[in-house]
Image 1 (spheres, rainbow, N blue to C red):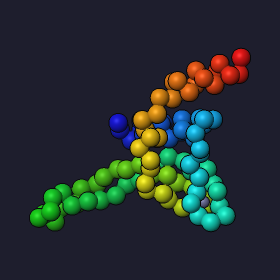
Image 2: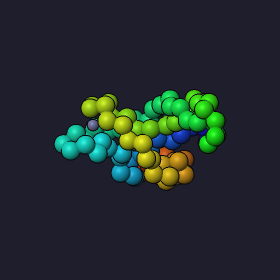
Image 3: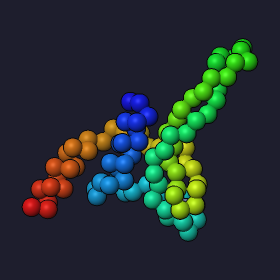
Length: 92
Ligand SMILES: [Zn+2]
């Protein structure tokens, strides 16, 4: 799964009515988190002094700017199509 696909999965999770939305962990904020791509650096290997750029997905709070860097794996593994079908069925 690439970062674009991960962000899409996060967006689907946040819109899904059958799961608990990911919200900001800061006290009294409760902002609805958004999937974003961040850029970082890491050592190419343990002995080198060469840094390579890395891109990662994190959760950003649009309300207070807090970043959450751990994302539950279930967000990426959920079968969203099933939930979309269920939602359609319930709305008919
Ligand atoms: Zn927040």
